[in-house]
Length: 85
Image (cartoon, rainbow, N blue to C red):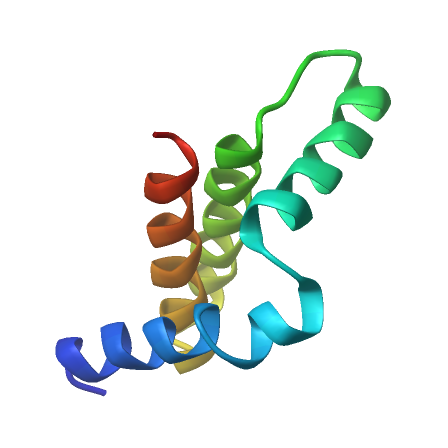
């Protein structure tokens, strides 16, 4: 997949069906951050959830290239950028 196709696909996912399925990124990742903060006993912010999810996708790539992991990592990092503002 070409780099622009990877980014376009990530854009379509985070601004399309995934937002319909999971709600706004602000609400969804804030909810996850709240739950994870309780588990680890350290405050986690929504944008940090996105970083950790991107890192999970990057870690999976150690087993070899998978198009969906590249796309998802790009999407999570784009969302992290927005939520960190």
